Structure formats: structure tokens, C-alpha cells
Length: 205
Image (cartoon, rainbow, N blue to C red; front, side, top):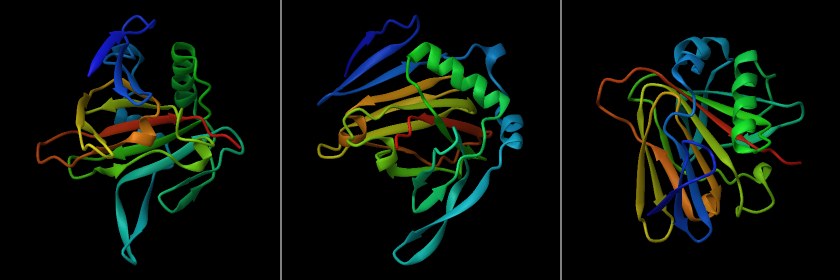
């Protein structure tokens, strides 16, 4: 996988081919800038959701909240989310992300992983609300709290790429990543603390 520095001082760009690439900041937020994951989670209206699998209702193995600008409705995994307003902390993180990446994100999906048994299965973030095509969907994944393993898998070749997403890191998925790749956050038997993942997105009409 080809990698090079981007214009941001500490960002690396990973070329995935087929017009897909990642931008990776191992330390996007300095330690003093990072909210505590558990404390921020208590400020959010996190909820336990379900999804339908083979005709039966299955609990989602994490807690979820959706925040965004007025009108940024988001449909995800069979659920429709009306945006909760930006909290002061989320707005500060949104503004930092806009300033450093130049992406006008207007919504954020918060996923709270309470321990190693919480996870995210294989999927692509390619919902219609994120753009008319999957060729340049931008999803910025900001991690707070415990480090967790994040895996990407090419849809056809099954080639894999892996990152350890630690406290204060940012992984930005760009170009055709959502068209050609899926990603997941696997369960782990290791004892890990809580992790709050804030995936900032651009919701279009």
C-alpha cells in the first residue's frame, strides 16, 4: 500500500487503488484537546438499537446517537435518525475537523463501544444521504478512549488493511473507498475500556 505525507503536518495518505484513499492522523487531537470518552458519552442521548437479520430482531452491539445540522436526517441499518443538536463538545470537534481537512461535515454518528464485546460488522458507509454516487463519500472517524482494531476488506479481492485506532486519532476515508472496500471493528477478548467513535459525515439533500 503506497503511503505519503499530505499537506497536514502529521497526516499520512494511503493509496488503496481504484480512486480510493485514506488519510491517517495517529494524533489528530493533542492530549489536552481530547474529551474523555466515557464522560462525553454520558452527555449524548445514546440508545440501544436493533436491526433485522433473517426476519428476526437482533440487538446492535454498541450504543448509537446521531447529531447534526437541522434537517440532516440519516437512514442507517434500517433505522431513521432525526438529528439531535450539536453539543458544545461535538461542535468544537466538528470545527477542528473542518479547519484541518477542509471538509464541510454537517453530521456525526456516535458509536459507543462499552467493552471488547461491542463491535461493528462488515459494511460500507454508502447510504444515499451521503451523496449521489459512492465515488467521493468522505467519512472521518475520530476515536476517543481505548484503542481498537479497525479492518478494511476489498469487496472483490478480499485484500485487507488494518489500523489500531487509538485515543485522539483520525482516519479519513475518501474517494472510492466506500465503493470498493468494506470495514469492520471486530470483537476482542482482551480487556479494553470504553471507546467512543465519532464518524463525521456530509449529508446531502
